[in-house]
Image (cartoon, rainbow, N blue to C red):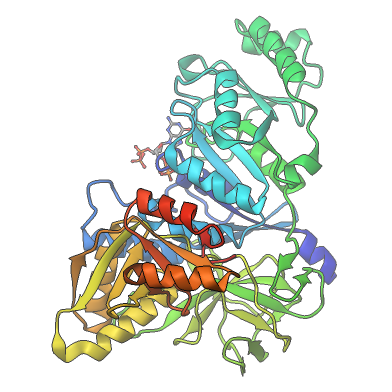
Length: 526
Ligand code: G4P
C-alpha cells in the first residue's frame, strides 16, 4: 500500500463521556468488533470510584490501567483504528483535554436517561474550540429514558452543536424493539441475548413502508412512521462536510452493554470520520501527506516501578513515516535522538513498532528527554501548537517537609509538572512555589509520587486564589502600572511567562475592566 493510502485509512479518535455514561463499555465493544479482544471484560474500567479520592491504591491502579489502555489500535474493514483513552475521573480532566489535541475526531457517549451532564459540556467545549468533528452515541436504550426528540433538543441547546440522527430508536426500556439505521436503511432488531458476542440480528428492509417491518416492530409502527417523518422535516439531510467542519454531529442510538447499535456506529464511523488532517506549527501548517516525518508529544507517563524512573512519551505522528532506529531531530533540545524500541499498543499488550504513519500514536521510552508539546522532525525547526495548559482552579503552596531532601523535591516537582500532572507557579514577590491543578485528587497524586518516586516529602499550605491567568499586552505603560499595583499577585509559570493570580472572581473582573489593554488568557497558548 502506498503512503497516501496508509494515511487515508487511519482513524484516530477518542471516546469521551461523563462518568458512567458507558465509555468503557462502548470502547470494549468496538475492540470486540475489531478482533482486538475476544471476550467482554478485557478492558478494565479506569474509573476511580467516587468514594476513594485519597485511596492511593486506587490512584496507582488507575495509572496502571491507563498505561496499558492509553492507546488501543486495531484493523477493521481495511481501516486502521486508533482509539485514545481518556481518564474517567474529572480531576484528571486536563489530561483528557490534552489527549483531545491528538485526535482527529471524537465520539461522545450520552446516557439517554441522564441527558447532557457537566463533564459532557466541558468536553464539548474543547471539541468546539478545536472544531473537532463529533459523533454522538446515545446509550442505554434498553432502559427507560428521555424522548429522543427532547434529548436531541437538549443536546443542541446544551452542547451548542446541531445534530442529525443517523439511526432512530423504536421504543425504549423494556419495550425497546431496535433501531432503524437511516444511513444504511436497515432495521436492527434488539434482543438482549448473546450480548457478549458480536453476532447481531440484522433485518434488511430497504423499503421502510413494507408490511414486513410492521411484523417486527408492532405496536410501534405508526409512531415510528410519524417519528421518521418528523426527523426528515426537522433535520436537514446528512451532509458529511458539515460534520467534518464540526458544525453538525451525527447521532446514533443503541445500548453498548447489549452490543446493540455499536456495529452500525463503527461501520458509519469508518466511512465518514476524517483521516488525519493538517497540523499547525509556529512556522507553518504541516500536511499529513508530506514525505518528511514530524510529530509531537501530547502525553507523558511515568513508569510505576519506583526503581526505574523511565517514562513513556506518547507521540502523535503528524506527517511522513516514523521508522525505528532512525535518528530524529528533537527541536527543543536541538539534538538528534534515535529510538530502538518504540511501542505500538494492541489492547493490553505492547509491541515494538518498525514503522508508523500519520495518525498513529507511538510510545517512546524516555529517561527525561521529553516534555509535553515537544516536537520531533527530520531536521526542520518548528513547534506544534495546540497543547495548551488550562487555567487551574485549585491552588496550594508547596513546601519542603524534609530539609535533607531539597534536591529530590525540586527534581520531583520539575518532572511531575513536565508530565502535566499539575502546573507550577513561582510567586514574584517572595519566590514561593504554588501548585495549581484542575482537580483536588492531583494534590494527593503529587504528594504520593514525590514520596515514592523521588524520596521527597512535601507539605501543603493553603492559599486563597480563584484563578491563574496568563497576561500579555502591547501597552507597556499599562503593563508596568499593572505590575506595580498587582505585584503581590504576580507569578511566573514554568516557562517564565507572567501569570496573574486572581484572588476572587471580583478581583479578576475588576482587573479586566480597569486594564483594558491587557489580555487575560485562560489557556497558556495564545
Ligand atoms: P464510563 O466508562 O462512561 O464511566 O461507563 P461504563 O462503561 O463503565 O458504564 C457505566 C455503567 O453503565 C456500568 O454499570 C455499565 O455496565 C452500564 N452500562 C453501559 N452501557 C449500558 C447499556 O447500554 N445499558 C445498561 N443498562 N447499562 C449500561 P456498573 O454497574 O456501574 O458497572 P459494572 O459493575 O456493571 O461494570
